Image (cartoon, rainbow, N blue to C red; front, side, top):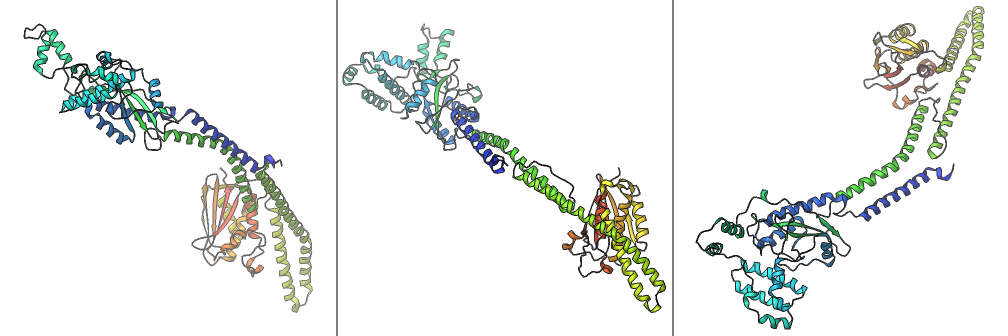
Length: 598
């Protein structure tokens, strides 16, 4: 046998191939990433999108001074950091958050380019004499918008103006500060673009001064008036943001960015030019957009820690590993099952079956060795039967002559020697019975020479009991139409030995009970006596030739020890099987299973 054909080599080879396959799958998933932007992370994107929809609804209907509380509540709920940015990537809630460089680069590539807002254009015109740089304009725009919102909501506007002036001077150069001191105050102080007095609003709308508003003036007034009515959430714009994700080695966080509506005319409680100046107008003209940036830690229970990608990987690895190992396991277990079945048949005394496997590996070599053992045992048992048959056949003629000689001697002997002659005749008769049983045992079990025909089971058993055990009480429970395929002579011989065994050992316990029942394609016959039974450890050897349960038994009490062996051989010659057990209610029970006739 070649070394590569051994079972050990096959197992090691499969194991190495399986490890290579698992490594390839894991490397493939690592290469294509399994973050929220992976095809396997659709559920993570859904979670991010649903959270963005809920936050957008609340931001749209809440004043801007409540936005920090809303973002904090959603961050705590989802265990992730929620940030809201304007078109230039600056925080909309006045905190000091500034995205990392890699995230800012990612936002520029993923989101539409930032356009110059109306605030920036306004500031550029107002401070054109200062010649501000682009970075100064960015800082000034942030300071302006923050101070504007504080000015509108603060009960002390002058303190807000002082803070605004101090922050503005901090970003200017010394020369710019000198020029700034020459500018009029109304040019740089934050202002609310709309009058708060309704009378002043009506006067400004009445352009012709006639004290009445015509349809044109009324339309213009309503278009510039702030809406204070909050509509239900069903009237809010539908959010279907495109989720952009980033998982970079330069930051331990997983980032998700999308644009969401935060202001909508007719829905938001405040809506003015300054209120949406730092927001992007939605391309469809409905509402204004801000950038929602979510940072989640992959180690925590967050948007990026969905188990489904890893479940998919695990199922794929298990499936491929199963495809690798099932054929090998099948090639191992199937021959072992066949070897087990054959050894069970050998233990029952059936040596004619073979496996016929080629000796390629350890299991097939074991099967080949079992085949050889079965052949050797079949030869030994067959030789034993032939030897017993030959010996019995050779003893028949001398025994017959001896019986004739004893008969002649009995006629010419003196009366006081008759007792010795009768003892000799009895011994010779017992030897003749033993020789007959030996011949019978050697001839049974040859199924290939028998013709199995349909035998009525009830008639066969009744005739056998009447002939072999006429005085034995019996109870038959066999259907009249119950028939089996068997040799009538062998079947009758099997039941005759069972009847003689019950008559010899259990005649005083009760009747011999015989019942039959159809089970599938076979008929099960149960023969039970009411004797003392046999020890449990003797049951497996009860059908062995010349075996007696008690070694002290003689031929007078235990027979020759061939009766049950002949029964087993006769039943097996008919294609059936026989077993015995001690009945729970007492007595010995034999179960014969024979092929049904129809």
